[in-house]
Length: 197
Image 1 (cartoon, rainbow, N blue to C red):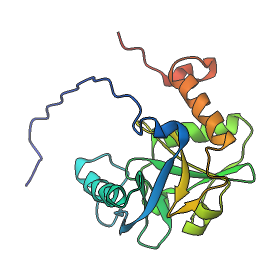
Image 2: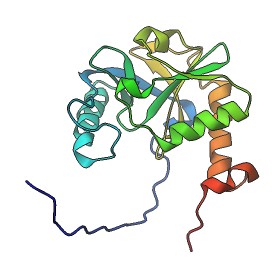
Image 3: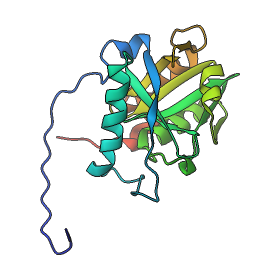
């Protein structure tokens, strides 16, 4: 079980992916708080995109889907909101954004940092903080973000409608701005892109 002094091989396969949540990405997803806790850095390095870390994500996602939901939300061992199985999470309350901080055993996502930057460039206040389930239930808007998920509205959690139960305006705007940045339509964010020929 000692991987040191082993040759490293990498294979990259480019495949068309489409939207991670399909059409649900536009109308919003329904989520269930998982009974499984998010792994923490006392167990594995949670900031690493390591294959072993994904077992936690897989079992929480399967639990949510088998209960009739689209995705799971994981809590930390201390009971604070962490993230989705493959996405970071944000709330919007009174026009301000908040997302769990790294102390909540989350992946320090590139898309999360991108959404924070875009939000601040739009003049919105963004904070990182400990977040309770109640914060999700009482938020005006909730959304996931990630490489595959992009910006996906969350319209229901544990049977409770978020806001009016429809994707919120700020979530829609951020999704549009992220898409424009990722497709080279925003000059100020061109530095984030790498041409592939």
